[in-house]
Length: 161
Image (cartoon, rainbow, N blue to C red; front, side):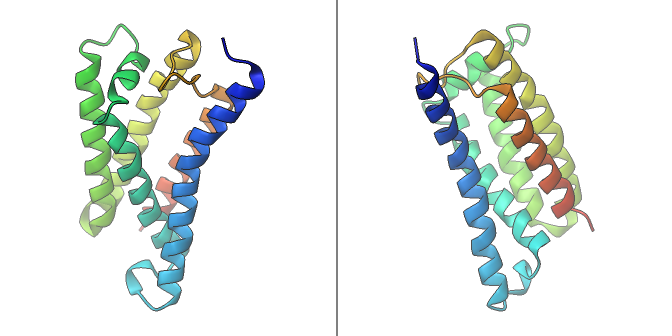
C-alpha cells in the first residue's frame, strides 16, 4: 500500500510536528525567561510550560476529525472507544492546567505520566493492527517508545519540587 520511504517520511513529519511544538515552545519560554519573566526563569520551568503547549496541541486531535482515527487505535476489548478518546482529551487538558498551577503541578505531572503510559497501549495496538491516522501509517514502536520516554522524563523532571 505504501512504500517504505513514504511511510518513514509521513511518520517523521507527524512526530516531528509534535517535537517541534515542544522544542520551539521550550526555547521560546527560555528566551522569555532570559528577558526577566520569573515564571519561566529556569530550564525546568520552561520545559513544564512547553509541555503545556504540547499537550494543548495534542489534545485538539481528540475533538476534531482525527478523533475517529484515534478511536480505532483503542483495543477492541475497551467499550465505547470514542468516549475514551474524549475522556483522554479532557484529561490532557486538565493535566496541562495542572502543570500551570503550582499546587497541582506534581499531581498533574504524575497523572499525565500515567495517561501517556495508558495511551501507549493504543499506540501498540495501532502499530500491530496497521491502523492509519488520516490515512497515514501508524508510528512504528521503535520511534514511539523513545518519544513517550522523553515526554515522561520531561514531565518527571519539570514537575519536581
